[in-house]
Image (cartoon, rainbow, N blue to C red; front, side, top):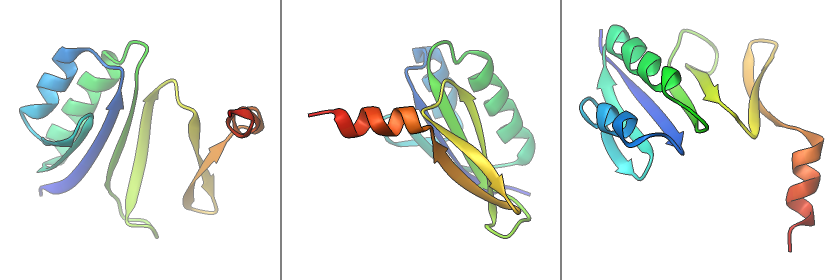
Length: 104
């Protein structure tokens, strides 16, 4: 059964962006949305995560949990997912927060 997916990428090679546009709409630069089967989602994510290089990517897709979705990440992330009693939360390190606050 097909379901909606959202993929956000940054600093990825052009061929990865091209592969994503074959299946998903690029609604803004580096943000892809579409409705695909689980198999296509897995294949797209495999292609993205294997070619990520120095970039980063996040995949959001429907899941049978309290929030109704799951997140998967690849590459170097400033934010990390944390499981908190079955809920997915986003955490930043104290170092990155203090660096952001110190910017002019």
